[in-house]
Image 1 (cartoon, rainbow, N blue to C red):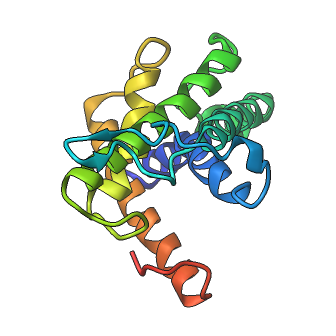
Image 2: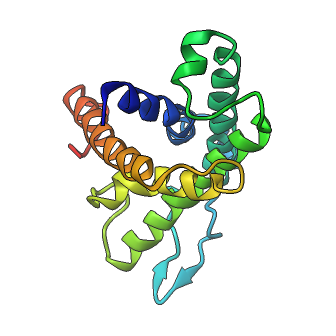
Length: 182
């Protein structure tokens, strides 16, 4: 695995990162959309997803995925980013790509929340390795109709996501923005 391939995979993860960060960036706004996805319902005595998985997060996760995809689409007009991209943005439906990215991220993250509730892990508490990989895993699975990443790149993308998530959480914790180190 060479350095260029690693950069290409990191670049591939940009819309996924946009989709994953967007709900966090708007969590203090649009309070009318901050309604739980699970409608406060329970499953086997536990909330299905919890209060942190909201319609606001779903909407802005999708918007973040779309914005990240369109950013890459516009950048693909330059030779540097065109060569860096694993995705040929000239031949795919960029709106669908961004939508599926955002939806996949939020569904993946919501599935992780479902697992946390089953294992009695409190919201916001660390759940290694699931917290680090469910969002990109969801996005990649949802993107399969439009883009099929090789299995090798898929594994590397999950590994990069895992370490980047831990690094970002640690920085946030050091800056007293996050409550958990990982």
